[in-house]
Image 1 (cartoon, helix red, strand yellow):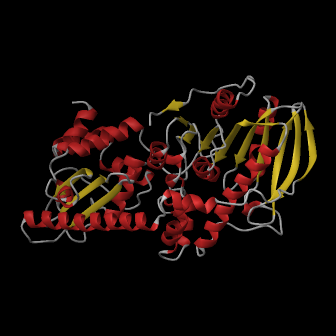
Image 2 (cartoon, rainbow, N blue to C red; image 1 turned 90 degrees about the horizontal axis):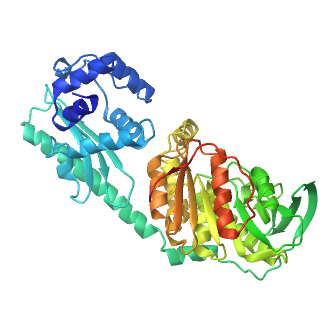
Length: 482
């Protein structure tokens, strides 16, 4: 039998002989324990093979794990990018086909929910089931239920696991329902970004650098929320009319992030505006983001960031050297979230490029596995981050990106994204309205693959008629159908 066939037999038929052959193939129980450590699981251990590992003696730490450790392992193997996409699909397909645990987790969740599970039973009344559960229209749920020491009949132990699964499913369904009630509808949410476009822009600019394709300028204009917006403006040589590009930088960046790209576009015939967000501006305008204890404050600051970008559109379109029909937006990370909102509430763009965007804030703050995020999450008081993402979640990209039409979207994602997982990317891409194009690159959150730049350039050349310039590619992007 092939290794794939052995995996299927071990999962779908609970074939212990197949499981032992797989263990032999990977180097035995110690190798499996080592693999668990590489996944970040410091608890799970395997010391013996079938059937000896089934003793389940109280106090014996051999061949043990915990439900939390198993959920971590499932997250790494089924959701994160430890395995290739084809291997993740093969593993989940086997779990979906498994019929050995029909009376446990599968029996406790709604029939419309997809369940892939692996159950087990051994000595001392030990009964367990682990599963990846996919309700409609939400991220997957990973569930592990273990019971040991019960003297009840086997079917009663299975029914108890089904009852626990039912409670978990009801809790998730109730949370989703409450979230849906708490989240404003699109028409209501869109009014959060209304502003008075007739107020003076009060523009102040000065040239700080001349280059072969144009000039880099330091510029300020008035925010709809008050105070000046600091930005860079790149203007091509000549009289125009030019295309125009508005940029939104990533959360840990500044207006300087896109200067090299803006200079490239100047040579191709585009004016570029790169504003700072409210939390990046010099004193006395500085405001700090990530007030996890004051989510309403962060929500207002983020709304201001979008309003400042809308005001940036006003600035660009007021320029006599700009062709109002050739305006594009490029946003990275937070900038992609703002771009989802802009594309939904402001139809003046000809196209939008959304780089490394996250579907929901919770995908980072509650579900992200980056060590810095994990440490940050662990340092917060219980319940603080949950309330934070509930409040700022009103303006998550997922609520807006589906309303972008008719604006064409280019969505760019990283295969080695460190802040959120592939499920979030796929959720985002699937929710985005057509027309759209979705590309993946073998890089991290910064999307520094030259091919990503080339693809943006080619996309903009098509949609806002930039002049074609030679851009060196690296490797072809990976395209995933929505």
